[in-house]
Length: 229
Length: 114
Image (cartoon, rainbow over all chains, first blue to last red; front, side, top):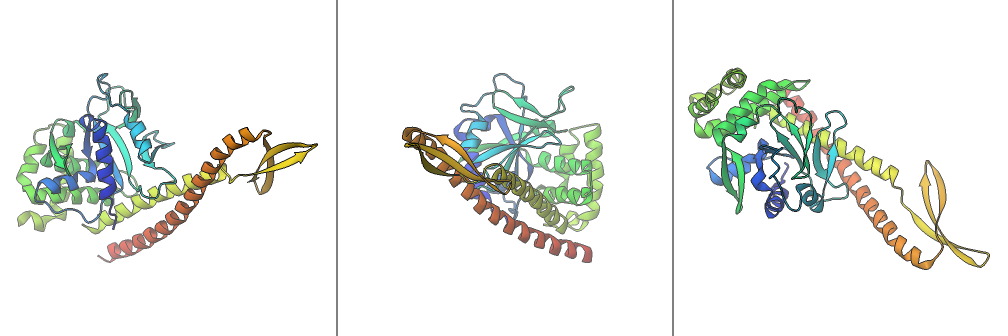
């Protein structure tokens, strides 16, 4: 249905050209095409139009890209759009652009004080803090996507993070969104086997593990048939 | 892909398209198409910009020398071109939105019947 892979490749290529990819970890559903190029996992037939990146240590003064990510994204036909409610910023296709359809968002781990979106000076972008990003930051792997090295979370940690995050969904469509998260994780669970996902989740204690366990229960009831295979 | 994922994807797409549609409409409203005409008054040539605002045709002084006109007209033409492209995109976005809404209705119906 939504075939955005060409555009996704162009974004990755542009960010690689300005040496910005070394500061960014690709997260969200768009890691799946990268996984599927490196592992024998099936690719999704359609993906969300949101490309999410997370930034480790955004306050690090040595974090720089020349030219800035902001400038590069403007150059390739995206404009920043700030949400009036959450103040978070994402790059959407320029209004006159006919070829661009994806939007790009930058996330980071919230600090003790910093919980609202803030500007990362060296990269010239606004990042939105979101809980449990550190699970992804601490477990990364560099994979090659069409000749470009891209940092992504390790497969089991990406899947267990998805399962845990499914329990933090709120609002009207919480149940549907939860199922979408679990469905995304299912691809990796089926590929690696559930023992490895549970092992990855158990590397973390406290609330994250509890969220995972809660999500795992739902997962088991929803995809019971596939787990027994 | 489970049905729930399909519904969430479609809803997100609809939300994104609606946001984009609003931005386009606002841009078109704030940046009307401009034309430039010249007038000879008491032997002098003056250039005026003409555009529509709140349903009324408005004429505003633009410049009086041809050099200024040549410099300024490029900007106006590129703004008009951008506006034209946005208008085209607006139509496409409206059509896509309609198709997405239809797909969502079908997906929701299927979800209810499961």
